[in-house]
Image (cartoon, rainbow, N blue to C red; front, side):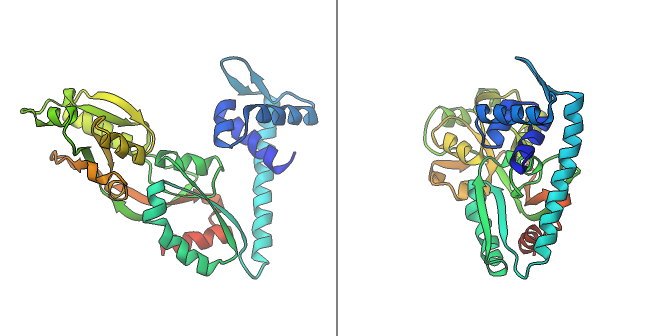
Length: 292
């Protein structure tokens, strides 16, 4: 067993989905299948029971999962011990954030971190904010700049950086959505809405609908706040997004805020990582810079 094969095995043992592990660990399905088959050949035992509908661990697979988890923990501890013996902090940090956060909040953090750790490498991945915590939990990235979820996993450390107001936005140009919003009294069930696929925006969107007794007319479900702003600008419908995303959007002049008299809870933007890794020197240095 090598490090990469062990990481792939543990992710699959957690997700129980070849498709999900292939996507989230950036490996092709045939390659993942070959890795698992090679492990089973090396260990001379079946690790997973697979059929067309499901994947599940065998009893032997659960034993290997326990061993592999402890082994990787020991490996990370060895890396930590070796780093502590070095005069300078070197290595790589795999970082995840949204496209907007890479403009709005990350540069100031990286500027300070570069001064503190000039030999450290940063690998940045951008994507949907709703995926950030899961990517950290699955070990795909080391640390993420993200909005705090409704339920933070118990093994995750999170430190707030700032609060981000959210609001409903609508197309600024005339069209079907503008005509529906101009009707009095306002009939929410006739207004096209863009629904967040998941995450903090989705929970706030659903709470507003529930509190207001609205049966929504959902015309699209979208991952990513930046994509939602673009959809609104195209006249597709209204959407709930952080205001900072609108401010940094190239189509911000084509959308406008809706004042509806409802107070949406701000996003709590911060950094997160697995608690067991917050004493690793390089991650600890980044954490201290970001939270200072």
